[in-house]
Amino acid sequence: MSASQQEPWTVLRLLEWTTDFFKKKGSDSPRLDAEVLLAHARNCTRIELYTAFGEEPGEEQRIAFREMVRRRGEGTPVAQLVGYREFYSLRFRVDDSVLIPRPETEHLVIEALDFAKASGVTDRPLQIADIGTGSGAIAVAVAKNFANCEVTAVDRSASALKIATWNAEQHGVSDRVTFLESDLLAAVDAPAQFDIICTNPPYVSDSEYDELSPTVRDHEPKTALVSGPLGTEIIQRIIQEVPPRMHSGGWLIIELSPMIAEACGQIAKDSEHFADQHFIKDLEGHKRILSVQRC
Ligand code: GLN
Image (cartoon, rainbow, N blue to C red; front, side, top):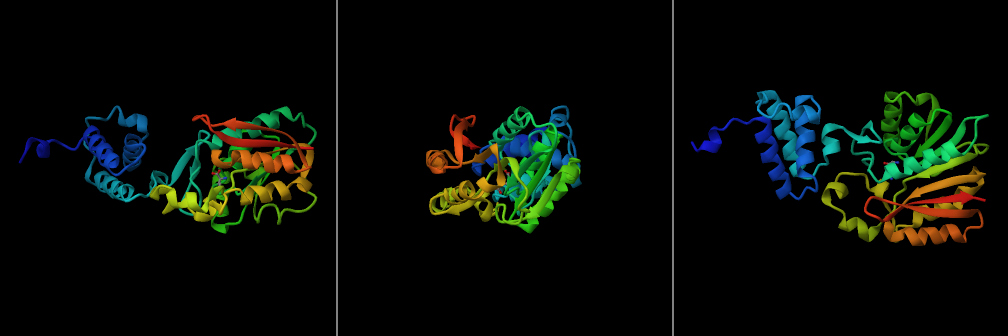
């Protein structure tokens, strides 16, 4: 037996071997993936791995870890293997029926909270909608950080709404988030008027979808990602359909891809119902969030 075969499979050695394996498989974050999976198998935090480098995980942990490493190597997202993803410092349950919350979307939550705080509304709960709530990430993060609100979170997918409802319960905001199966706001009672409407809608074009990494394309729901031939179709519908459901002065906050940012800004400019607008850039400096104010 060679020296390397005799070496014990310590936490450090498992991490190094797995990082290298994931790198070869094309992961963007091989070390992080390895740490999250090993921490999950050991039922500890990532930080705790760093004080356990010399320890040898037992048989059961090694088997669980190896199985997750195999599936990650085949493309399954880490979040689906462990069953959750951190978003806005909160843990969200995910499965293959919902989009895995992305860090870019945290910019949208910050923007919504800024508008909520600046609204000056104190005599009633602020009315907020989240269109295409998926895992409930936006609705729950906003409700958790702004108590005086009522959030209406809609999605076309009943299975997504189950996950979102669970996440709202876990984070103790079920009293102020209502989930509803709805195509945009069609199923929301007509008298409801919103101060803020948030949405991270499907905005990938058909051709961009073909180019997505297999980890996304083969494992996350297509209906949460793809809009149509242009990518702007659903955002266009939202800009056209929501004005009657908004308070004057209210904000519509839309996540989009930098590729369609200008086109979507123009769609809002062409609408007689919206006045001010601005973009927020993501950490890579690309236009990622469009906020438009209802006249
Ligand atoms: N609102 C959810 C999120 O931002 C899901 C969005 C979607 O499915 N397009 O993660």
